[in-house]
Image (cartoon, rainbow, N blue to C red; front, side, top):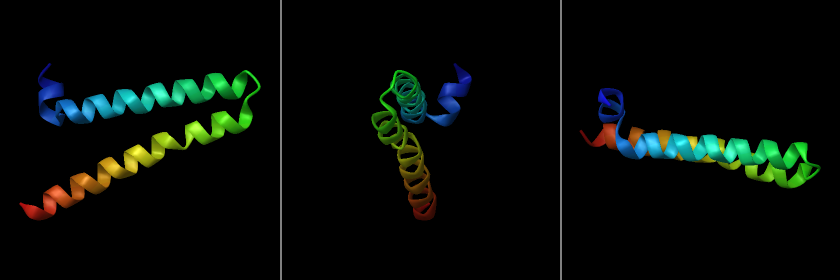
Length: 62
């Protein structure tokens, strides 16, 4: 619980969302929907990039 408080609840939720996206993309890819799996799989790095960008913007304001 201390770990969640340290990194923030919103960051934990976004990381769980990224993990879910990766699992769905793997499921689609392995069940024959390769293009859909690749498309959805690209969402996770995009969300992680947005998280990093927002964190950099917030650190610059301090």
